[in-house]
Structure formats: structure tokens, C-alpha cells
Length: 305
Image 1 (tube, rainbow, N blue to C red):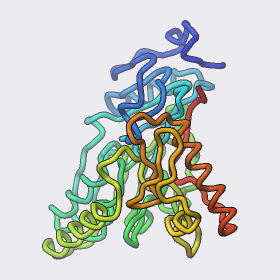
Image 2: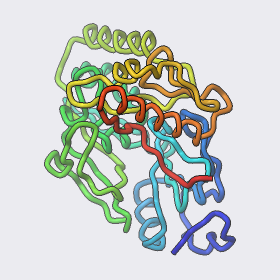
Image 3: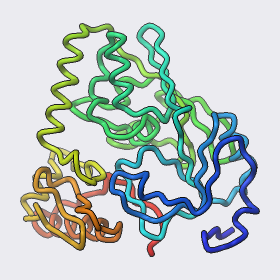
């Protein structure tokens, strides 16, 4: 099946659900860059069972993509084919039992860090510095300030493309740097993480330091997608970019941040094409200057316009 938003019969392929279903839904407002086209279908499930039933009835060749808060994501200007699944507030539960914290996948990472602080659990402070939601953090083994998801991971639940639920252990995840070996069609719905008892004042201080460091060093109050490129082993992406003379480089309405040059910024009227072309130009210049190939950390999805 080739599903396209210009086909009038896409409604015929979308099963009924208890959650919210929107057709030709604009996505730019749901991303940090504030760029990109529309989703053919945007589905906000009521709960995990609703998600499972919806996926089980959806044609098996209909593309499906989960969307968190839209950080670390560039949606191309032609929009996204098929169904985009977005978790609403009903997927933001946090339950604490001793040292274990069970979190729904739509929960912002910063909320997880704050809940751990409230429970006097250390080891999750780094999530204060991770943009996005838990689902995305699980998918990419997100990390910051010397820690990453794999360090605190206990188990996770996910739903596959056919609507079947799975429980995953540490071995199932296959963690590596900014990556897991979980099948691409798995959508995380929940995870259990482990903290350790700690001094609340020390935890709070560390979280404040992380927040202050981000505020001082990153262009947080701009339209940016977060860290653009992965750090090559033993190297810093921003130093390579700076060394290639890319600080402040501009294409269309997109610019390399002068505050932290591993961040790309939408200055207000950038298209996703501007941002992607700028990123590719940065990669080209870094390769020419240092011989190092930068790999995108920001996920780029969707159709060209």
C-alpha cells in the first residue's frame, strides 16, 4: 500500500479507536524546530490497550512512527506518510516502589529526574539534562553528564507493529552509545528504572548544576532540535565543527548556533530543508577539515516537499 495524504481514501484504512484520530495534522507545532509538514494521520491513544487494538487492525504495510515532544527530530517539509502516534497526558504516569521507578513512555525526562529527587533517589539526575520523553530516551539510550539510560535500566514494555505487547530486559535492549538493538517497529509504552538512596540536598544540587550548565552553554531558548551530531569516539562534535569554521554558518533561515555549534537553530523562517542542508554542509566541511565523518544524532524523517 502506498499511503499518501493526497489520497482521499486514507480514511478507509484507519480503524476506529477510543483515542483521538486526526487527518492531515500539522506537525511543526509539535516539534522543537517548529518546521515540517503534516502527518497523514495523527493518533493519540487512550491507553496501551487502545494502542494495541489500533495497530492490530491497521493495514500491516501502513507506516507508523511514534512522536514524543519533538526534540532531536527534524520532520521534512513534505510531512510524514502513514500514522504518527503521539502519547498524551495519560501516558505520563510515574510510580515509585522503593528504589524502582516505573514511568509511562510519554513522561518528560525532566519529570522523571524530579520524581527521583522527591523520592530521595540518586542516579537519575542526568535526565534533567536530556530533552524529550522517556520513550525516546529508551530508544536511543540517551545520556548526558557521564550517565546514560543503560546505567539505570531494569525493564521496559513495548508494543510492536502488529499490536503485540512485549517486555524487555537489559539483554533484550542491546544498549550501545546512543543506540539500542530493539526492533525499529517497537513503540515503548513503559519502563522501570532503578535509583539508589541518596541525600536529597546533594541530588538537588547536582540537578541545579546540570540545569545551569545547559542554560549557560546551550541555546535552549531558541528553536533548536538539541544536539545535532553524535560525538565521534574520543572527540567532541562541537570542537570539530568549530575547527571547520562552521560557527554561525547560515543557510536560508537556519544557522549554526554561535553559543554551541553542535546545535542548529531555526531563526524564525527556516524550512526543514534549510536545516537539513545546513547540517549536511557542516558534515562536509568537517570531513574536509579533519577527515572525521559526523553522524546525525537528530532523527530526520518524512517526505521531501
